[in-house]
Amino acid sequence: MTDEAFEREILRRLKARCLHAPALQPEDAVKFVFQSMPGVGHLLSVRLLITLDGPCASGKTTLAGKLARAFRGQVVHTDDFVIPHARKTPERLAVPGGNCDAERLAEEVVIPFKSGLPVRYRRYDCRRDVLLPEEELPDTKVLVLEGSYCNLPALRKHADLRLFLDTPGEIREARLLARESAASMQRFRDLWIPLENAYFEAYRLPDEDCIVIHADPAETGVS
Image 1: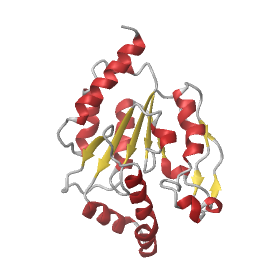
Image 2: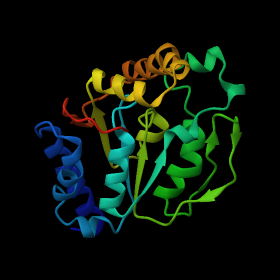
Image 3: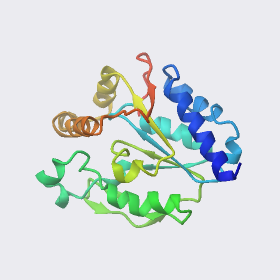
Image 4: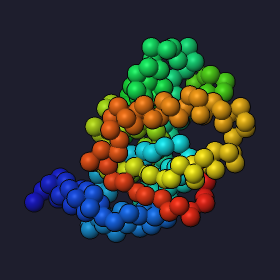
């Protein structure tokens, strides 16, 4: 069996196992993914793209950091690729996932990473409505693409593993209340959450190829 065929077979077995696995707690997810990959050291001879999707305040950022540390990888956040204010037209926002600049994210990060090229990208500062200076992603074999909209077609077609973090609404609500101002919380309710829900519905997420990680209702950490 060639190296490429071996690596594909490992990924196939991992996906099959995870799709039928019992519900996972977020703190167990990294261990499960890591231990479910026999020959993981060999696998990491290629570049592995993991997408981590889920509703706002579901714990994606925390889990992405754990995955990156476990795999000695890097994290890129879709929140850094929101479209600029000038492009937030009613027509663009009416498109499911249109709030994310998936085209730029694919061009600057995903495609170069999967091609083995250096990744140079510019994060978007939403508060100032500017693109920040270009930065280079440290060289890595594993990239965790974290955040809502990472399952848009331009992105998910490049993914090797697609994770979806499912956390009860009451936990997500409590986290948002703890970290957001009253005005920001209202904006989440009026705009960001409906946009996310429209995206999940349009792409039927989590779909059958997503590995769903169910959060424990007693878990109180923040994302």
